[in-house]
Length: 101
Image 1 (tube, helix red, strand yellow):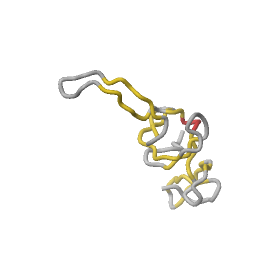
Image 2 (cartoon, helix red, strand yellow):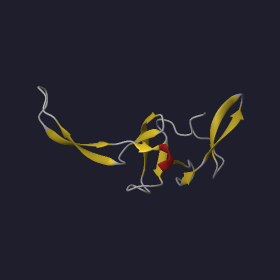
Image 3 (cartoon, one colour):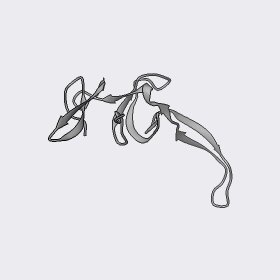
Image 4 (cartoon, one colour):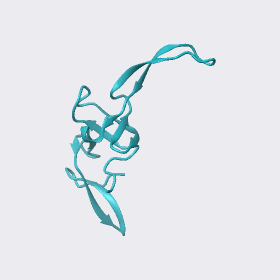
């Protein structure tokens, strides 16, 4: 199946504690997505010879069904479709019809 959301895309969170927040996708793995500045969790970091023990804040992954691509024209959430242009398959925002980079 073609990827509807890819690394570097602007997305809007549609469900969960961060609903409504937008961010850039940092990592996509299977059906989990890491979005910059969204779903922040605190983690106890064990001391190593190079660093002290500390509380580290980092982004945790969220399920792909809880995010939607942000429309390149309006910034609102939109579904993704596919079109063939010049012999290449491209992603298209359903709301505005614009191609997604």
